Image (tube, rainbow, N blue to C red):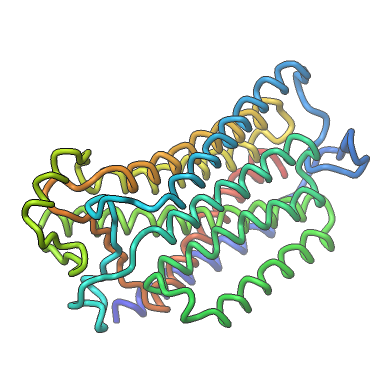
Length: 351
C-alpha cells in the first residue's frame, strides 16, 4: 500500500509537471559560433565579455580540477600498507547472505571510479573552455555522465558490477547512443534543454544515493552495530600495538559527508550555468563549483585511504538496500527535481 501511494503521488507530480511545459513560449537568444570550430554553441552573445576575466576565471578552476585528478589517481591506485586504513562496504539491511556475513568488498573500486569521474570531468571542463558548450562538446560531456551512471549502478548492485556486466554494458551503450542522437537531431534550444535535463537527472540521483549512504552509515555507526571483515581483524597483539602508534585517525563517518556535499555543489554549478547562460559569470561559476566539488571528491579519497576509524580497525560504509522499485522511485524523483529546475528557469529566462 505504501509503495502504491508513493508511485501514485510521483506519477501525479510527473504528469502535472510535464503538462506545464506546454505553456512555455521559448524565446531563445540567437546562437553565436565557436571561435575555434565555427559551429553554433549553446548561448547567445555573452554579456560583459572580457577575455582576461574569462581566462583567469576558467583556467584556474581547470588547473585545480587537473590537480584533483592527479591526486585522486595516485591515492585510489596506491595500495594501503596498513589494514586499519582499508574501508569496507557492508550491507546490514540487505535481505541476502550479505546481511550477516563479513564484507570483503573494499572501497578501492569505488575510489577508482571517483578518480576516473574526476578525470573525465577535467577533460570535459578543458573542452568547455576550448570548444565552448555545444553539440560537439556534448559528445565529450556525455562520457563523464556515463561514469556517473556506472557509479549509480555500483552503489545499487551491492558493488558487484562484474556480476551484471551484460546488463550494465547494454544500458550504458544505449544511454550514450540515445543521448548523442537526441542532441544531434534536436534543434536549438531543445538540444541544450534535453542535455541539461539528463545531466541534472544523473547528478540529483547521485545526491540522493550519497545522502542515503551517509545517513545509513551515520546511524549504523551511532548504534555501534559492528560488522568487521574477518581478514581485517588483528590477530597479533604485538603487531596491533606497534601499528596503532603510527596510525592517523578520523571520526567516522564524517568523511562520507563529503560525497553528498560534492554532488550538491556540482548540481549548483550546472544550474548556475543555465541561469546565467549569456553571462560570463555563468561559465566561471560552473567551473569554480566543479573545481570545488571534485576537490572534495579527491579529499574524500585521501581521507578514506590515509586515516583509520577511532573505535575499530576498519571503516565500514553502509550501502543501503536499493531494490529495483526503490531505484526507479529515486530516478523518477531525480527527473522531477531536474524538470522542476528546468521549468522554473524556462519560465524566468524563456529558454
